[in-house]
Image (tube, rainbow, N blue to C red):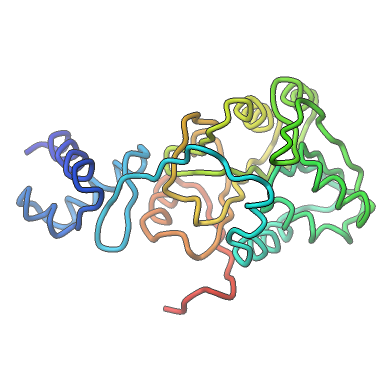
Length: 260
């Protein structure tokens, strides 16, 4: 059986059963574990499957993005650790972009002592926090207001970003896989793509609980990012896939991390 046939068989088995062990796949196709793992890594890079401990499963589908209120209680320790680690990468006297969301807010909370820092954001909560707690120069994109997420989206926000030169963009996502970041909201796509084009360095800032999920609209492919900052809950398969793609990865340790 040639590689293309093996990978299609893997997809068929996973589609039928939801999750399949590596042992089952090796027995079914009478090949080595190494061969199957290579096939699975290829499929994961394409965003077709997600590697889990001892097996493989289909990506979860995100039909609706949670509200800002719901997000505040999701993966709080991971986001706090990611925000702290990401802040250590911010250079003084630079211009950065903070994407809408609670993970980027966790980063903003560590910028209170930065001097001569310009922060561009489409997020009202981040802008208000920095307004009250920092000396940063703040630029808000404006645009169509998304009430549920307290941010601006759409073409007007994207157009504002196209006129800027950003040193670092910290880009968030509600779902991501090795194919890239995706969203169920079409009006967010233009903003993600505009900031990627306007920035010298693009950093994906996203906790590991969102890995292995996909949504309708592919906003940015993984190769658009210069770095990924997430937490130590990221599956080993994803870590290896990012290494193979030459995308630097920083893992934030948090209180719930299980020591090996």
